[in-house]
Image (cartoon, rainbow, N blue to C red):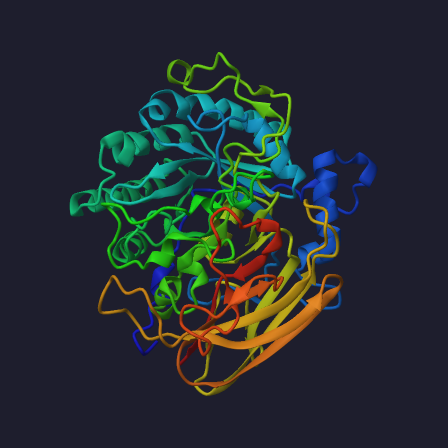
Length: 565
């Protein structure tokens, strides 16, 4: 490939051991099912699809907006062409229940509300700890299986929130099947930092994290489970996910360790008191500690427009990985524990230590305005381009980077493509071209087209195109900058209804590059940390105690690459 670009080396084929044929479309997506036959959750999802222009023919057309032809979609592995069309399925891979010591809700509560807020897939990720591995992994599974049966339009994965040895937290989840409980239980017992006492920063603990990823890969190879994925959660919150650890996870098991939360959960924490907690968005309100990597600046311990510093900084840590040609994807999730405005609480007689879970929630007598979370899908959504409606297809879409994320329903649909000649790729894809060929970026956006859960219709003010050169592996595994990455085009939109098409001419491309997208409501912007020449109108640092998330909305996409040969 020249120039040392390693993108195609990071997508090994991942076999799933005889995946069953996918089922039919969910009722909300099937236009032959009348509205009157839908449950409230299904009807809510259908409304979101209608606003995006995706119901009926559109939903099977790779998130195609009305009047837009479906592109050919490149699979991430090797840039191969596929005639398959995509379903864009909204989800959340970071959700807690009463099986977490600091959680509260039943599995069914989270799944029901996630479905009501438009989600198609969800991952239950209760905290790893000695009590959870002793009781919780097994006890939550029947609840998850009941939710799968009760909410047939929802894909419900079982996972856990891993205390990564030597680092922060991460989502680990597996494809449903006979081995899901035993594999998760053994993984937690042997490789969870909280269970094994290995959370501190040390080379030995970092090696144990790699061993945990290796364990998951072995279970897939041996067909104990069909698939497994890991994503780093709130990676910059405490500064303990060092750059070399992130690179190490990806290099060790690129089919397992695939990305990070580009935006953390706990977004309601920034709502000012007395109407909210008056805390930090994402609970990013700390400072460096004993285990923090010393190279992180002070501003990395805050969110920027609700997004993690690693993601929000143009030319920052995320871009340093992309500039090496490493596919490392972003997501956005609720991290739902206890939700703002909810009317329930834990019962007074709950006994988590004995039972492995809290008692079922009870009526509290009034809304909880000190909680920092939203229901799954209420504010944050991760949209995955899946080839069909199945667990395997969602995991494949995540692994291949076909993902865009939004806050507050800023937009309702996104179709981004790089094209040259007769070839085209979408998010996460790699467009292989003849050196010097002209390349064009085409972006179709379905605007909000209706009120969000705060009962207003967001306006998309601006869309930024971010472009970076691919320069090959960095000599220093703790690199946190990509000096060749910058905003190269900004489109002023200023609309909330209908759809828009944006095009950007990359010119004749002779060297490897990538592009990614970002959009905003324009309420809070400032020059990025790299200066106005790099990012003239980036997100602003979120103020602790005064960061209403509904007044600062953004969307981000995963990148696409261009590889001249």
